[in-house]
Image (cartoon, rainbow, N blue to C red; front, side, top):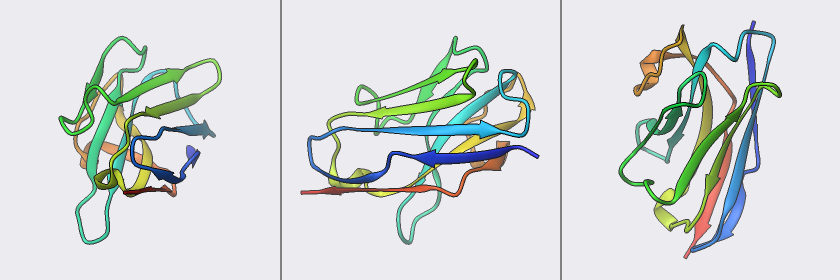
Amino acid sequence: QVQLVESGGGLVQAGGSLRLSCAVSGGSFSSYGMGWFRQAPGKERDIVATIRWNGGDTYYADSVKGRFTISRDNAKKMVYLQMNSLKPEDTAVYYCARDQRAFGMGQKPAEFGSWGQGTQVTVSS
């Protein structure tokens, strides 16, 4: 059974940067698209970014374009989210997820079947 563990969250001032990491174990990784999602209190879980199985294509939510970068290392079974120019509205729990379909690249939470426990990101103004 695949397991995902996020790390790298924390408290940062507006304009600062954080790098989230997601370690994947117990299942296939290199054939699956991966994604980062976030959920703020009282809100639905929303997509942040996704990356194709080979890293050849990425998707970003409009709210993070130009500030966030998703990447992956298939040899290490890791996914990363570099977050720059952070804003208070980026405050949320961030989740790493694996697409349900091999070679897929979903853009909705329902298309992802395996999730991490989340890591809190708090951006102060």
